[in-house]
Length: 139
Image 1 (tube, rainbow, N blue to C red):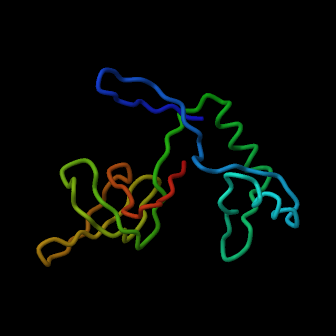
Image 2: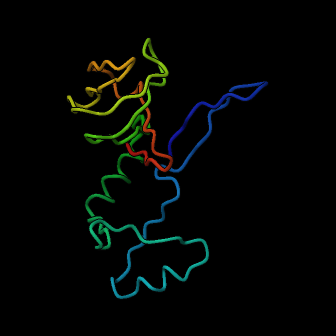
């Protein structure tokens, strides 16, 4: 779980959210995945290149340690080269662009096309959001 400050019309409040929204992690044998798919509320099993995604126990343990260790956890969008993004904060707010390069932990270069001209700018990843409807957020 992580905390996020939410604004209502009459107040602000800290709200707890699951770290990975809409995901349930299950430790099952590969040949038992049909039982998971038959569970009410389960839509699909996450796959990469048609193979069921397997998360090593060490990674799960590390995530548990982060949650239980009192770290300040924030969700952020996961960007790759070619992603279409929109600037949501700062002086370029409202402009659309394409991720050209990833620079360090929280800086990216985006190409912004405006009035038939293009320029690239290094911008904090916290100032942009993916334009994909089902974009996934991660740590």
